[in-house]
Length: 438
Image 1 (spheres, rainbow, N blue to C red):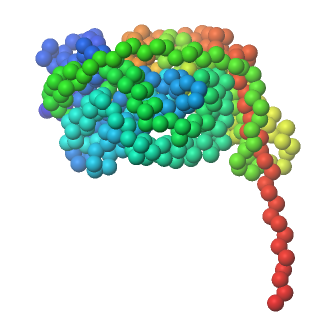
Image 2 (cartoon, rainbow, N blue to C red; image 1 turned 180 degrees about the vertical axis):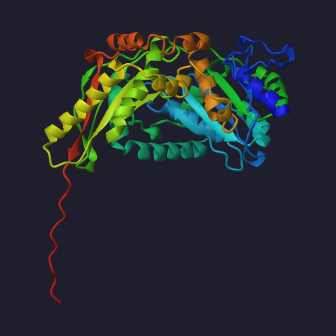
Image 3 (cartoon, helix red, strand yellow; image 1 turned 60 degrees about the horizontal axis):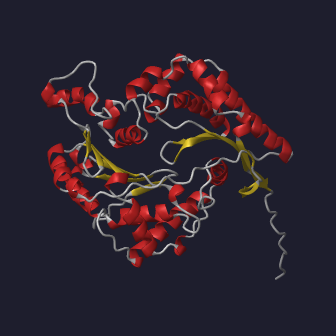
């Protein structure tokens, strides 16, 4: 009986701000989700029943820091990413918990998945990261090495290289091009001062979601997190000014294979204008992926940029012809996604997928009761972008033709696009060996 009651309560527990539903449950069953403390810290407590064995259960903790790569200045590119990595590493437990860092343009996310039995210990360790920070060089070097290892794998991929080149034109950073950070120039003193100024309760949000008892968590928030010292408001980073047009082609890292891409600035999640992305992106991706292409849009890392990518496949045809074909495929996907009537099946699929990231719908109960991560992420996105769930849900898919047309006219016009190329390089011929006489 308990499981049935908890499952019935879940839609109310998943509400971003504890909003009252159309049918109000008994008063004693309502649970507050977001706690805004006097020092500015916002914490969401989202207990979710689990359908998996207790030994396999996980609680997801998502921390967002309202500082991203746009806060880095020239000469200190990558400072935010390195600072977040050091923070995450300094709070890791002795038995090897590792936190994932997602360093975006406007926000930095720290994601941890732990067993419910270790939740309180982890939250207590996290509270210590707000205190005085003696950034020792040994642990900072470990953070440098971890980031460099991750980025070296990522940037060796031609698709990511091209994505970065287009992002540098659509959302340029004051610190310089993406992937060009020199972490060895950033010292412990730089990181310590930066964190002291920017990482405090007023710039941080925390979501705790999964199968756990909320009572001790709430007590910890009220007794420990509420006593943290508030910080000063941050100055807004420089406003990025896009530079549309065509990018000089870069050489491919894979012989005889290249890529073309085209990107645009798009509205931020949480706005009515952004709802059309929930139809445009999956429909464009459906066409592109037939021949290995994709549509890039990441609400965590780069929420206001969308990029269509298509490989230039190996062929005996001339390079110009192969590149032209890839561009035509992008044009075809673009036209299909914007002009073809939206079917009922596509709308249903969008509602259960990308619409959740846009704040229009919630994660389904069976999903969150097996893995709380999607629910934690969507809950945080709704808070970060101040999403009005009822308004977004009521407008998603309504007059879809008109929404897609406005998206094209207001954002996806040719004059504001950026087009980039990864040029295929010919395969090197193997040298002819000389037969040796014995």
